[in-house]
Length: 164
Image 1 (cartoon, rainbow, N blue to C red):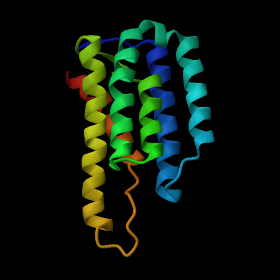
Image 2 (image 1 turned 90 degrees about the horizontal axis):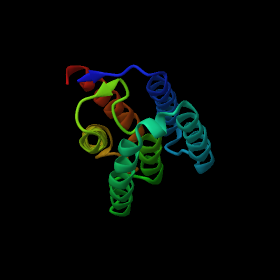
Image 3 (image 1 turned 30 degrees about the vertical axis):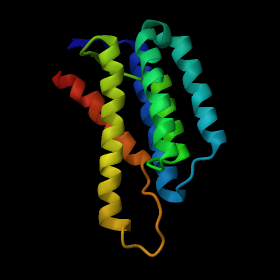
Image 4 (image 1 turned 120 degrees about the horizontal axis):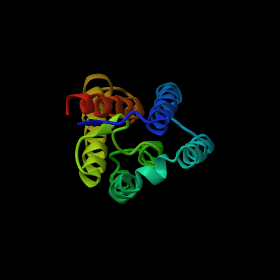
């Protein structure tokens, strides 16, 4: 692991954490995140990564992440595994903070795929466990709020980078 504590990486990390906290709260309380909110966050995030130089410095991670996550999230949405807000939040992460923000563990291609894949696996696994425990026998069948679990996955990926 090569630690790279750049201001661009830290800014991207903090912004993504703040946005995921907001989205998690909205997902838990209303089970909806309006497109306007996601679009506003995406525009702010996009401007931040361009202005700080994060996008240019990590271009390969961003591009590989987008090529991996966007089709996968569309597929997961189409089969009903995730909702629209979950898919769009994955897009937000892959655009603003696609890899490991405090360093580099692997080559950029592996970093983007492993980071995104691990976040998606954690989100789906914890969401499924939540559904089994709390909502499977509920009178109103709803999808579990997955964005809080995606947030946990994002934090796990960032923390695992320390051990890498």
